[in-house]
Image (cartoon, rainbow, N blue to C red; front, side, top):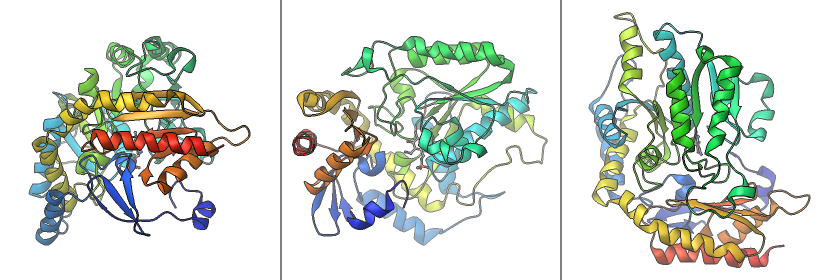
Amino acid sequence: MPFTANRQFKAAPRLLASARGMYYRSHDGREILDGCAGLWCVNAGHCRDEIVAAVKSASEELDFAPTFQMGHPLAFKAAAEVAKMMPAGLDRIFFVNSGSEAVDTALKIALAYHRARGEAQRTRLIGRERGYHGVGFGGISVGGIAPNRKTFSGSLLGNVDHLPHTHDLEHNAFSKGQPAWGAHLADELERLVALHDASTIAAVIVEPVAGSTGVLIPPQGYLQRLREICTKHGILLIFDEVITGFGRLGHATASEHFGVTPDLITLAKAINNAAVPMGAVAASTSVHDTIVQGGTPGAIELFHGYTYSAHPVASAAAIATLELYRKEQLFERARDLAPAFQQAAHALADAPYVKDIRNLGLVAGIELESRPGAPGARAYEAFVKCFEAGVLVRYTGDILAFSPPLIISEEQIGRIFDTVRQALSTIQ
Ligand code: PMP
């Protein structure tokens, strides 16, 4: 099973049999309040009628259309709808089927862009410690999670460097929203430029808010500084918005929330409410035009694509989902709920083992003191206790992560954190 302790799971399997709105139902018939939007992806809530209907009708109308040298109307409509939600200028969409594929696609686009400009020597990629960019070889190479890398260490991409992560509890513990300290960590990029020379560097990729490694919120001014340095040196900036895209921070993108526009954005998950696998890369017009106009007429300009890119059913789900986000003003709702969410999360500051709490928009992390000799065990046990008590939370290392659907109520927010407090008081 994916990212699962298989033997442990087999001993006590947790199975989800159905879902509706804010709730899952487990195979033994219990209602489970979803504190994670599945895996940071079901932002409109589960099994929404509008999306189900779109999936059904697309499946009946056009099950599949070949994507190479062919197209279909739903793909272009979905691209236009995604583009409308992107920051101005990022209006070119390449569809894929997952976040991992979006990352590898964005890295390839960056290389193709520099090559088309006559700078083929710009091949160095820069990621960040504690970055998670999926599980493709590109993603684990620029990613900064040791267990994700070490099994495959001999096969990672060369020519990759990492910026330091921005998680510093000495300065930033219990910050609400963006920490005040740490913007200077972006200057490490200048150090890498000085070391390698800008003419060798293709792109920098970061998650605006790192999710899977424990909800790391960027310090104030940090992303702006990265943008400035990239622009100064002609380096493309990629924001991996697989988690932050489509409302998590109260805007369509984290880029919009922070007022920082990258050259490429990777998307997946909430792009179609996770109803059907789908991801995308949004590229700036200039990156797109450089590659497409730089190619030979009649030849394939970007030698890349997937059989299921812009699958008709996934595209239909995306169109229906984006319409739902707009109609129900779910991003605004996330923004409105953020203060209550912040308050409820930080109310656990005095709960057992709590070492840090951090939050932004509708995402929060609670970091626990690790049990000596058993890192991750406490958070795992808290996760199990919460599940038994009818609340789904996520854990990563010894950090509990929260990212509910944007349709959550204040009362449900309260229930999630109350359940966590209760769970923490019953573990050792
Ligand atoms: N990038 C980020 C920032 C992610 O959080 C994830 C998944 N959690 C991915 C990429 C990979 O997405 P997928 O699992 O769909 O391949």
